[in-house]
Length: 165
Image (cartoon, rainbow, N blue to C red; front, side, top):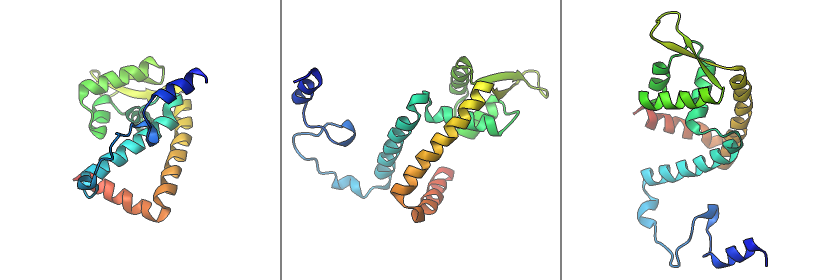
């Protein structure tokens, strides 16, 4: 028996996605009918999927959103970006610093306001965004297959309604 087999033999039974099962079944029927509970669980599943697709690129969902918006909105500044993504100013500064440190985003002095900087993708950032769009298309395709193409438009409309409320 190798080292991994020994470790697995000593561990309790594992559920799907590596979550430990309790020795006793847990009745979750009190949660099954709750929209918020199911929305949160679905979000966790989708975050795990995102991580499996984007992990090799060391990109988190908020970073992907930033790179996508900077790419499609030339001249965008940090304040506009933070407002669009509902990210606090201090958090946005940290996020942009991370992406700038990786050579993906650059800050340029604004032509309109000397106190402000616009954000631009670097060559490396443009190349990565192209790759990430392909990865995102595969992730979306996976979700569409799971939910069913007929249900995707309805699900998207409902999610937008929740988001915008």
